[in-house]
Image 1 (cartoon, one colour):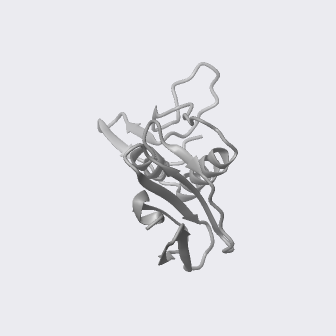
Image 2 (cartoon, rainbow, N blue to C red):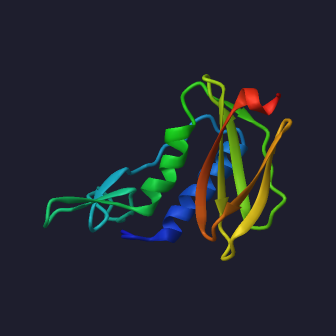
Length: 149
């Protein structure tokens, strides 16, 4: 059914997208992007959740956590981007990385633990200390020329 406001649903999107991209998926698309507040309409009656839900009584859009999780990928990983190796040794952190055609690297990091996690982003010769708040997703961008300076 409709999971209005569910952060866990957003985390499931983030985890699935990262794991799929790290398994060499070339595109990712959601089955439903917009549904009414009941999770429909659909032909089978199996009501679902979506990144954007419509409050049909008040005529307003409700942007769900999954919408913002998807945004970390769609905004920063641009068409033509090349997937690059990325790994995390920190418990609770998963990540994926791409270099866009404009030579800006996008690293999407998700912390699905209940604790803040401090980590080092190391890319080529560059490194930065970063903190990922508990139950968060963040995108780090780096000029790829800085990776090999």
